[in-house]
Length: 88
Image 1 (spheres, rainbow, N blue to C red):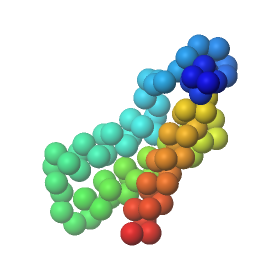
Image 2: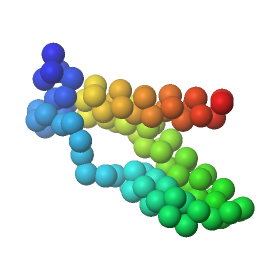
Image 3: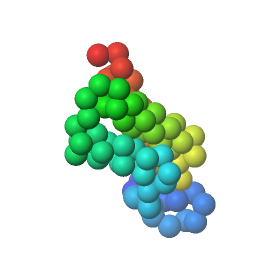
Image 4: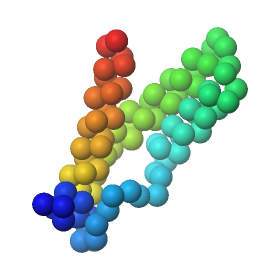
């Protein structure tokens, strides 16, 4: 069961985490800037939108192109949290 859950479908190796891809890098930078600088007004909203769009992009990418069920589930969880926060 563990092998099925974590096995990379391209390489056959176990993959739990990977190096950050572009949307995750954009998310982390935008989130960190917003957290460190605490900008008010338009700048704060812009950083929030960039971070939100980047994590949404990452989640969709993982659901569609994730290398194993673990990564696809992780993307689905992130999309669920983003959706829940938008509805709330």
